[in-house]
Image (cartoon, rainbow, N blue to C red; front, side):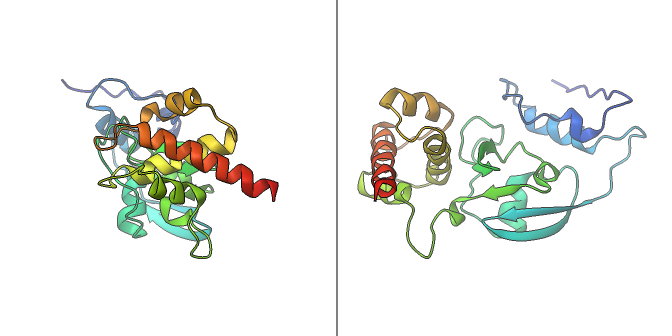
Length: 206
């Protein structure tokens, strides 16, 4: 099935690729996003763009093509390989990172969308060599096995706890629906997240 790309005369490529649109069932989502980000009115490729991104508290200035996805920039350009690419179409959650505190799928996000933004990956979660309570809880409560999906699981859980410090079990289940795991059966992930929430509340009370 071919993907048609039509561009309105008054819209830029960045405006045409929306971060807020959830992925559909089409396996062509990623290719379509890339085509849109490459497209210009003359049908030629756009020049690389200088972007400035703050990743895990460190400033980076990069020249990136419009079609370069954030997951590739993080892994290949910045060496932050904790961010994984699983499905490549935004449904498995393995590539989850936080941008300005919001959970995003980096396998669908063009790097240019992160210009001027703050990005947090799993490498930036610990502080002063001390693990974050979420990382501790996942270790203590068996929230990981093979570990491939764990960075995305933990960052998704952080976004939840940042907005909902006292989540219920149902809150965790609903929030984590977009992060898939083939190993743990999810119960340990839920248990780990709730344990981390309790630990964070305890820290805040001290």
